[in-house]
Image 1 (cartoon, helix red, strand yellow):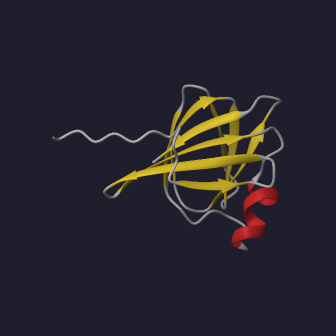
Image 2 (cartoon, rainbow, N blue to C red):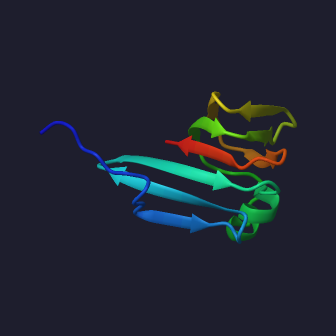
Image 3 (cartoon, helix red, strand yellow):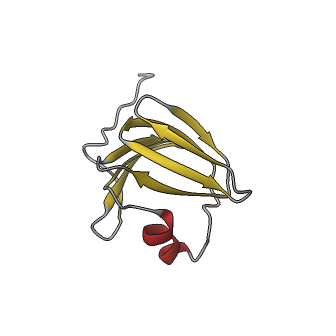
Length: 109
C-alpha cells in the first residue's frame, strides 16, 4: 500500500510518571513516535532520574512542543527553553523540567 497509519490515541507502549504525566508511543517498522503529556512540576530529577539512575538523559531526541513550556539543561551548564510551536534537536546529556502552570505536550521521534 505504501502508507501505514497508527494512532497515538491507541498507544502500543505507555510510561507513567508517578501521576505527573504520561508518555505514549506507536511504532511502524523502525520509526517510533512518542507523545508526552507532562504536568506542571514534572522534571527529569523527580520523575525520570529515580528510574534510570542517571543525572542526565543519554538519548538523542527530535522534539516538537505542541503546548506548554519545557526547559532543557545540558551537562555543560547551558540551557534552552522550548515553547509551543518549537522544534528542538536535543543531544544526549540533558535534563528537563516543565515550566509554568500549563501541561507540556511533546511529540518526540
